[in-house]
Length: 248
Image 1 (cartoon, rainbow, N blue to C red):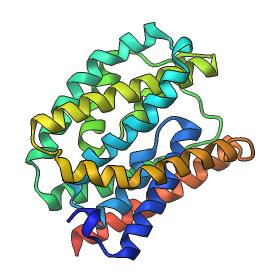
Image 2 (image 1 turned 180 degrees about the vertical axis):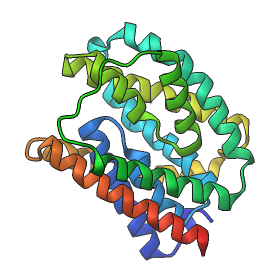
Image 3 (image 1 turned 60 degrees about the vertical axis):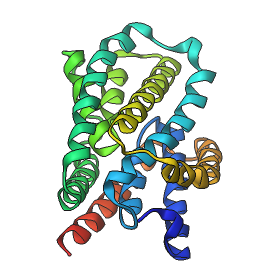
């Protein structure tokens, strides 16, 4: 069932989740699907959520990437991009063929796991610079195709490779924008996108804009540690809700 035929309360909660998701995306450059996929999958088939978020992600990331295009670190971009393309092909193929219950449970475990991982991480624990860029791109693309969110994998690579924060933000934004374009193409080729879903995405554009505006305001007041604590709690709650629905 698409959101267009959902009851008003479900539609309001989904729009609120999308607004929060894109506030987070504005702040850290990823996380929109991790935050929004759980609430949306409560009222939509999981196979519809990922293509919907691909459309919305492209709208948000393309705008951000275009504004910051001069700061992109193209060397690091080229390291990650080929693996990302291959990983998304695999992820979208699995998404198209997997059953609804399996996808729902897998999505719940993934989202909750990422939240717990963030909450249990030791503050100030820094890892050495990562290697094997193709594998990072492949893993991020796989998660992006299957769950709609591989951005944190790219961010983990770029954060340890780029000291300049403007270069980090710009490169992350361009990667996300192009990954969503590729995901949209793959979803179209497998019949996961249609006019009804496009209309649903357009209905959520005001929520995306509201989230982006809120994210810009919050960016001036909220510390990085506080932001990630809130994000991780939201992820755990969303993941547990999805698992409960899958079991039920």
